[in-house]
Image (cartoon, rainbow, N blue to C red; front, side):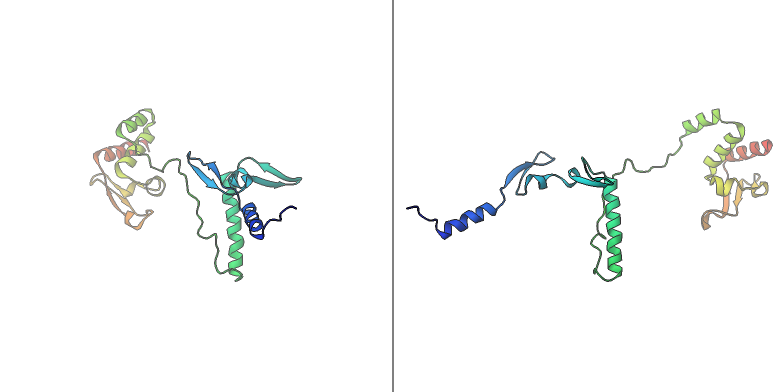
Length: 191
């Protein structure tokens, strides 16, 4: 006569069958980690994306960062509406920020003396004068230099009056160097 399994052994077998099997999974940085999820769940989210189109769904190979950013923006706006209507106490997406990858920090280009000389050799006379005035005085091209009139320039005392500037501290008398005075005189001859 076959022996019936004891209730204790049945419970142990059932418990063991319900526990996921732990297995080693290689990660990106050549480390391994034990995961207990099924193989479908082990793939990264960006590797298992389905995109809805008119005819149904299409499996995509990789999710682009711009798509994730756009979806997060939409989700954030939806949850903001829920917060406004007092359906949620706060927006869980409010604290989510994406890391920003900079291709290069913005650094302004400062023209060196040798580079200025090369530009001045190729430039026409009026442009050569403007380059010298800008580099010697630091005037803004469109806001300070272009609207300037002859009566604002005092070559005898070596200063320029700036009545309208981008900043309140910019409204002042700007001292001129010898190079700037020569450039202004050459420009007055051309004008």
